[in-house]
Length: 116
Image (cartoon, rainbow, N blue to C red; front, side, top):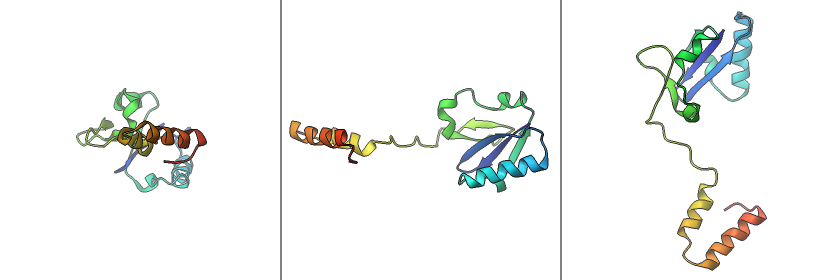
């Protein structure tokens, strides 16, 4: 059995090997330990093979997956913004640099491993 846990911030999918209450409690505790609040969130249960028909095929936008408001499963919510690039501050500095010396200073920071 698989369970989709729904939370306003996203979803989590867990596999419950035997489908027992003890296994469900264990999965909820794992999510809480990982800093997720899904244990108290709404959820849906699916058979192992059945779940694939209720998930979008595009996994690259999983951060935009949300509960389908008109049925079972998950949809891609296009209103959810993409997360910023991990080095967005450095990219912004490169774009704003007007001179070669400014670009050199950014490169030196990058090579030394310093944060922007």
